[in-house]
Length: 431
View 1 (tube, rainbow, N blue to C red):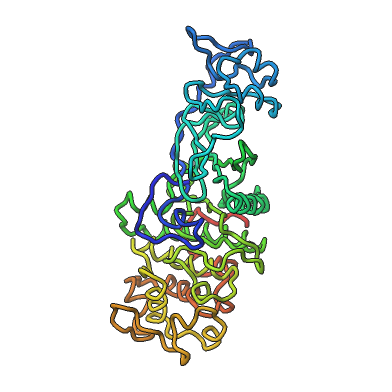
View 2: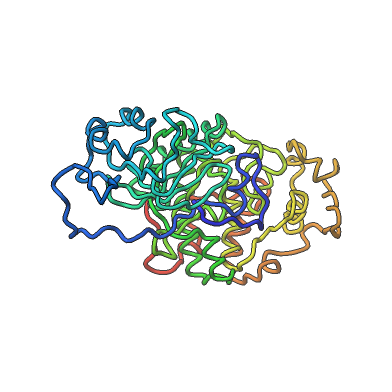
């Protein structure tokens, strides 16, 4: 749910994640002020007439499809006069001037690229009023809407209408349902899901800025260490909950960590479109490059440790304002890993399907075209980042381990001294 695209980073592979893995995320902006509770309401459910126009908002709804057709026929298209009977409750019918008049046919809702042709002022599901477009990418689009049932602003994610993306969207919703919890406030909660005009839709609460947009608004100045500690702890609580459910997030990055509305500390982890269950990966190549674990680049099996590698990169970026590993391609990315950590274990090179792209059979890193040959383990985390705090360095180096089986887990990291000694009054909630 983002509202900006930044081209600083190359897109994710596979193809259908391209725009998401650049700087397009699902940012939900602050909503308009809610209606005053003191506003009186008419006692009739009949349409409000203003001159010759009929308000598309149902007063004292819901009403039935029959009532809607009787009272609001002038604001319905020919197709909607048939479609409306698929819905039991009608709250909002959309402005007629904002609708696509498809003359009674069931097609014509999509753009040539299979996005839903959303129009501000129109309705979704005869309940949600479209207020603005928040973000658009290869996955689909995110709309800021007003829910006429709950009288709250919400975000509706509308998945692109292709078989591949519908399947991915169904998997994301399945995972989100497994992550619904009243005890974990650091994972975005799925409020509702449905299919509307052949598009899978998911409803979420309104959030604030994502970490990348927040950093950008601060001109990428380093964040105060106590603020980063709080954010890091909350991300770990979210990851620990995911991992306890055998779920890998698979796309941990600043764009997918959002502040709660009005906050610059409390966060929620979003976007589970690439997520998978442990032992059941769906993609050979995932994660945004700056945060991509070495086992993914080398074409090995992956699991929850990949998220901990990404976590370390995010912590560094928040503390310094710069990505830890900013390779322009996978070869340069791997070279940066070797420069810090030395050569990977021999078994990783043997077992990696893509290892020989980056290493010789003897295990030596191949030179990057146009770049000076690097020396293994020739830099330290301190020299790369200028981070002096020994506790932070220790946690980072426990995350940045070649062998994923030896990487620190989210559960273990929650007990790390740097995490437990964070700012007072911000203890993690139960995972």
